[in-house]
Length: 169
Image 1 (cartoon, one colour):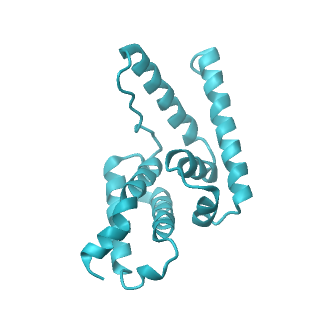
Image 2 (cartoon, one colour):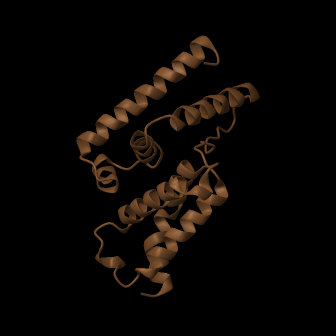
């Protein structure tokens, strides 16, 4: 496989790999390194890459596993989850500040979610994968994906309502 062919295959989902890595690793630099590492691993498999039913799902699974390994490693002691991908154009400064505050709180709330719920929420609500694709990536039944997503959303919703109702909680 030529490099141009490889780039045609991985190009469309390369940003998704980065966003997933950033969701898990927080640091932009760590996420860039993880994405580059996954792309190198995919390139190493370039002779057999076309045999995969979904190269994108395979790459997302590789990214998830790589990032979780990094988080478990001793050198990643200070990595944590933060969400900073939200930007609203054309709003007043106050609305922007409030929106950023809410997004910051969602990120903090997501930090405390169980790993599986965190992954399902990222893949479904941010990356917009369907339940079957998420199930394959995370080795879960689609019904289990729905349950985990429902629980994650409920937790985030309840904690946000609590924060907005009672102030900093």
